[in-house]
Image (cartoon, rainbow, N blue to C red):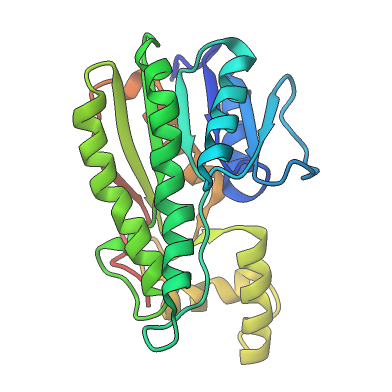
Length: 258
């Protein structure tokens, strides 16, 4: 299927590692002009061939402005913005502080708002402007742990819907909400936990128990980073021209988190 992404200029926030890094490489494979982003200017990471890089703290007002300006300076235009940058942290209802909540909202919601404010005018000038936000499938059935994380990601649902109305018809805006993703960090953490619990010492051995205890879904496995990235690329493509304001769950039909 021809996605029509060749030659498109794409900025992916938080793309120096994890799922964002895979998304950046997927766009590069399609012939897009990729702009990667890291928070730390000193971050050392393998970038896709023929890509450009910007760096800066997009949670701060000045940092977000500087990153947006640097991204626009690469080609003088922008076709796709992928708001991938986000984080989580451990905080319970009893122990989470106001600072915990403010920090997580800053990273997961305010950074998105700032990048949109700075880059929407350029995206409107594109022949097919796209914004794809990254959320989580736990926003409608959150677990009891980390309420600040789920609340901040839930904000992206309404932000996406509101922005789709504001940005149309020039720009489509959609949200991708994965469940548990098999990143190197997730795999390492579960291998350690699974070994201690006597589930086995390989991912193949413990994955069914991970699904059973933490991520129940009809497909019986955990999503790969590539599967999440492919959904992002589809929403950024010409093939998704009539999709906007949608929340696409990449969770194998799962019903939430444990």
